[in-house]
Amino acid sequence: MFVGHYGVGFAAKRVEPSIPLWLLFIAVQLLDVLWAPFVLLGIEKVRIVPGFTATNPLDLYYMPFTHGLVAALLWSCAGGLAYQILARRMAGIVIGVAVFSHWVLDFIVHRPDLPLCDDSAKVGLGLWNAPALGSGRGIDRSHRVRRLRGRGVVASGSPSDHGSRLTPRRGTLR
Image (cartoon, rainbow, N blue to C red; front, side, top):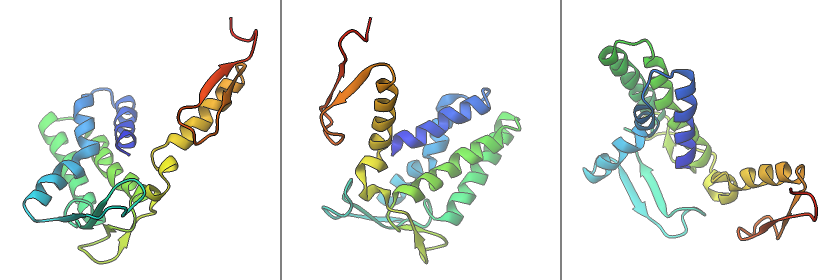
């Protein structure tokens, strides 16, 4: 899912070219950048449970200060305001939206472990349990196959076979 976060950074760069890309990458990952030291300091909690989800073994059972909805909104405001003050640019809103996009994308892939406020009600759609969709591989692959079929290239192998070959039809590629 990290690719999805960075995709928002690339999109934000197109919206506001004056913001350095490295800063947008930090913005879209800010919640995770903060999460790691919070876990190391014992402020937030995680445990490793093999098979917890289809894609990773992390049980993120207590993270209200970085991945809670209210906390994400506060970090977004802080990031946007800091950029606006330090860079003296009105592009701070783009930074704020980039920071908050992390929570939105995490909501899609996380199981219900994202607290709304403090450690009360938790939300998450759980796309991590559908690895082909959660990583974008299934969607991306079907898009590529459709595009290549239009050019006279067809897929051989099953859709779940990551080793499948794209084979040109005879006489279609020049």
